[in-house]
Image 1: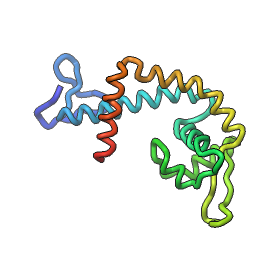
Image 2: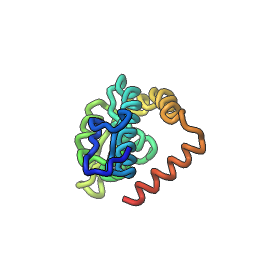
Image 3: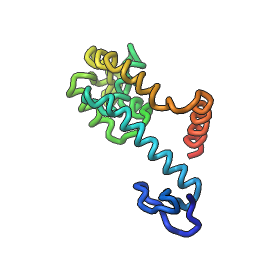
Image 4: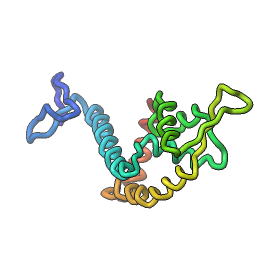
Amino acid sequence: MYDSGMSVQTVSGSKRGAGGRPTYRTRRQAAALGVLQTADVLRRHFGRILEPADLTLQQYNVLRILRGALPEPLPTMEIGERMIERTPGITRLLDRLDGKGLVRRERCAEDRRQVLVSITDAGLALLKELDRPVARADQTALSMLADGEVDRLRRLLDRVREGL
């Protein structure tokens, strides 16, 4: 429901219109909040898979990026640029993974200011252990949509990202 007045719907859905449905200022606000709420649901969905492995989604993303770069290590900044969810705290994120023995860092011989990061055997083993449960979570995340709907959703989300 869209409210023609100036009332604002909170993300928690506290303002309700007729029938108990949330009210929004515009359909674009409703859609934007819907995307944010869906991202949160998906984050929690995948987080439940990673929690037993003591990994966050961002840590998992870093490990996947490093596995994809094998056999080469990657500079810290390049990892940050490739991440799904950009974080200014990439160094702290790598500190935690290094502390768990999942990545290895070393100074670049050509440029001592640059730190190169690679995944360890323990990191690879952990990813291998998670591959099947994450693949199942991938399948169930959008299982309520037909293939054509998934393709349309991907195109629409691409347009939003490209437009901002």
